Amino acid sequence: MGPRGCIGRYLAYMEMRLCLTRLFWLYDVESADGAPDWSMEGQIENMKAYSTWVKPELKVRVIPVQRRG
Image (cartoon, rainbow, N blue to C red; front, side):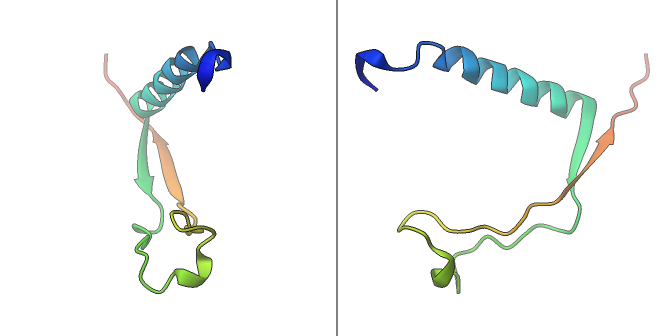
């Protein structure tokens, strides 16, 4: 990054963690259609570079949590 890196980067990371924590506190998140197969076997044609490839969609179901109190 060097001396001209983003000065708000760590604040943004903290905000993202806070948002995800709140999401998982308020909702149950589960797979809608089973766990996808993200193995590399037979996926060479989908690779864009040596370390990345196109992954299948990850569909989830988000259900509000019912808390007592």
